[in-house]
Image (cartoon, rainbow, N blue to C red):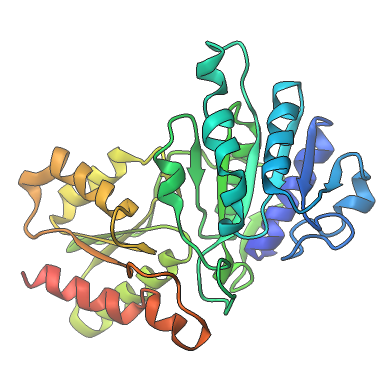
Length: 327
């Protein structure tokens, strides 16, 4: 049985069901208890599970993440909420120096089963440091998995998989589409595998790779171009930033011979560059045109009045597709 949920509702349900099933699962974060979190993702969980398992922490990201590492090493499964992705910087050292390395450092004697949930991305009119998209910081670190769902169904299934993973997972939640739409989500627990992409729109002329909020932008552009130009655009939701689903990337570009990557992170050293490298290494002879990147600009995410000019839009994606197909 299923019903329609938003992404935020699906995330809340995933945590609720795992906390009910497994007494080791607990939550830590700023304002997640009494207030239910800055986006209300943990609303109602304090009343249901108590302050020992839904812990309102001080404003200290290094302390929150460091505590979660210790808890994970000693039998608990902590889920950390960082209010916005850029707030994670004070805890960055804990993540890359300790959480990601513990299994390697101890030669497998210890592991750190923990999830770090955080909203990311622009489009909500947030002030400075509330709109960052810096997923490559974490994708570059061995020992971390990095996940970015684009839909309620995937958000629930991927979060359950992340909670059950024996190693640390950075779970990026696209702020702009938290409550933008609903879709059918099963009531029971289910898993969406980490590291597996999904073709959300079949096509034959060009492959578009995206994740998070950019998947809907890519789909919108693909639909418009099919109506306007008759072009068939395949849209692939990567879902996981690390490990990337190399097979899905290569399979799609071998079929279409053209590719476009859409991400709102800064263009330089973004995940688009890594995807292009995979295509060059494994499918270059199939390509009919260079791979195009439609990305954020190499500037800080701007303030409210020009924020929309920073984000990739359907129009920018359409222009990139046209340049690729007409190369």
